[in-house]
Image (cartoon, rainbow, N blue to C red; front, side):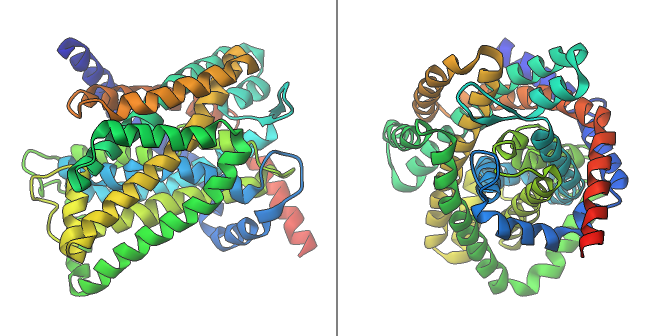
Length: 449
């Protein structure tokens, strides 16, 4: 087992190292932002307007655009916002948060581009559902010559889903509930698997309906709790930001750290949290009831803004303001300690409840991603078996020893990287389509204004 762990560590370090994924993610995000003339930043208010208007769309697709974003956010707002942020600070120091912000800002263009292509090249499957994502825009946009790249994405996505979107989530929840409420992990696993099964077996429409109600509530509640702690420690805000910006370029806050480690952990945990560039979110946006790729792309880019620049920032600032960032504790316990200090005994319960809801919605969102990848490879006949296997994996993940799940975490990191590479290549090659669709939309908008 140790040999497997060492091999996966080596692969993860290489894929997420200075020569592969981080430069590629940065290159694609910067290139798309420049090519779009910073449109994702300039059109944020307009995007929120489109989101509000898209709550009850009756156009072609399976779910309204609002539900598509909530489903994507259900998958992205998960343990990465609590555990991932704390882990980034533990290994990379407070400066890692700065690089999370940077990758998120440029990731808005990446997420926009993914959704544009997902809607532009989506198909209707045998069951009449709108299906899309990187595997479809690779095959339909780049042609048969590149179809193998779409197959590779679907294969990695189908497997990665069980790591990032299933067992990692249920394991984190089970151990948090055990630490806070002394609830046996098998009980947590059974509860999660049962509740998730009731939703997942109903397909994307039921997932969308649940996400539409849960995601806004959970995000707002968590942000409000974080804002309360920030307000109570308002005098420490300047020093907190000074620490983040200084450490981002020195890497001196954590013993044995370096600038590269700060960047590496900030970018890696940022991607784990908002998934910009992984190619997962466009699978949800392809199901949106819309006929306009650009409009859905604008809605999609808000996911990165909400997930990283708002929700993750709340966790980071609470950890730094309460002074637990250098306590030697890592993961969810660090976040729990920070909220406990900030809000007394109720703080730990807020983290536990948030982690449970965040992880639950992530399990729902990623079940759809994995299912669509499996369908692309094996057809619609695989849908029910995949859903049942997914539900079983939730229980297995929750009832597993936390130490053993280091292997699952690392495996998820490797597969996330392998997912991203085909998707980023496709985004670069199809960027002329993205730019043209955007120009045409904005020009038409000017003429009708």
